[in-house]
Image 1 (spheres, rainbow, N blue to C red):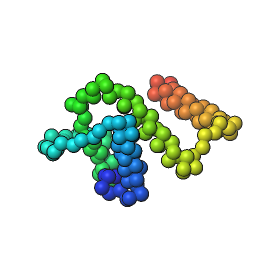
Image 2 (image 1 turned 90 degrees about the horizontal axis):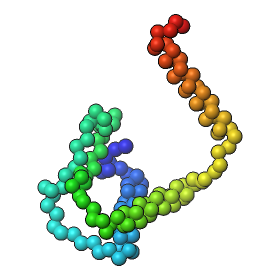
Image 3 (image 1 turned 120 degrees about the vertical axis):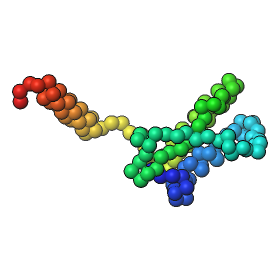
Image 4 (image 1 turned 180 degrees about the horizontal axis):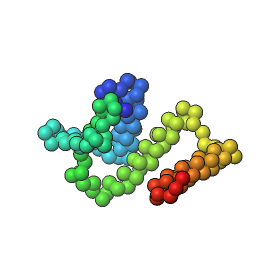
Length: 135
């Protein structure tokens, strides 16, 4: 992960496409979008703690702080439609990349069972050793 401005055009495509499709669905549903002159001093960003959110490359995400934005009840159905459309846009992209839906194969189930057994054995061994029982 890295700041948006450091992304290549290819990497930015998903974000631009999702934003564009969101605006398109608003227009398609009959909403009119207008913009007043923005006072940039009113735009606030979340200040996320570096110890939790800073990546090894120094990047800390800074999304807009939307805590004070109250959504009117009449927009709740729109939020549902936008969320559904976002999922469909995501699914179209994955299908174009060759993703498919398939049933779990027997070999996959065996791998999952083996991993679970190994994790249980490691955790039980750790608990056994930490309780002071002799080895």
